[in-house]
Image (cartoon, helix red, strand yellow):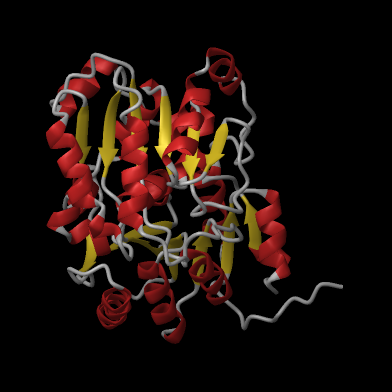
Length: 384
């Protein structure tokens, strides 16, 4: 009998990282893939990206609606409660042997706490990292402590998970999952990308994604306006603007980016979700990736493309030399973009060393899951 591996996904970015792992589980002779979808994937506001999952050849085993049309702290907390109720029913029906969860979001925490109560072993991907500007930082560490198997993206992260009391034999440094796309995913040409987006990419362009800094009492809308003002200093560059996540303050950004695109229809494209193939293609063809998404730090350096990382959301992550850090202020952002466009710096980025591995995370993780014989009671591992 095949071992049932349920993979949970709630956002477009998370699914892009999970894609090749899901494909490798699907192809395994001893594993059975179950796909559990929730959160932003099911929301028309964020592009109903569950359809992309189906188009990619996956069967969705369960859909759990949880996302309220509110990005206040109360709305997010209530969404977590709704999620736990729906996840309990879904996990009862699917009865997986292992639940795979990636990252640090509130949807994942709600899922993992439910699985823990139901005694379902959790395999956590991308634990041990730090993002000081988002409350996801605490969620990630909480998920690690609720998990049994750990697949981390770099050696310092493996050491940090062990420092948290997790048994070293169950903590595996496999590299970043998004880098598998570098070796395994075909990319679109500029013409193909333009046609797919129905937007003429006839100039150099930036890829821009900005999320709220949820760990602080910051004004996300004001910070985003600083970013837009900085982008105005580069009228010769087009801009692909993707929507923020469904975090506290995220919905305040959406009308601003839509208005910016409407005011600059030939220069700016606003889109809820690119999907991972179009996103990776756009990154590879771009002059720079700008914003505060984890992708700008983890995956983008592997393309040899400069990243401008704004504010404190990703503060604490390992970063390649191609990542330029700046404040969420127009002058600081503009100066960093100018540096990213410098010919000497751009050439240096093409040869940068990425600390997140070589693109084999999915295969290495599946090899462990294929050998997994079941969970025993966890014992806190004290450092000697």
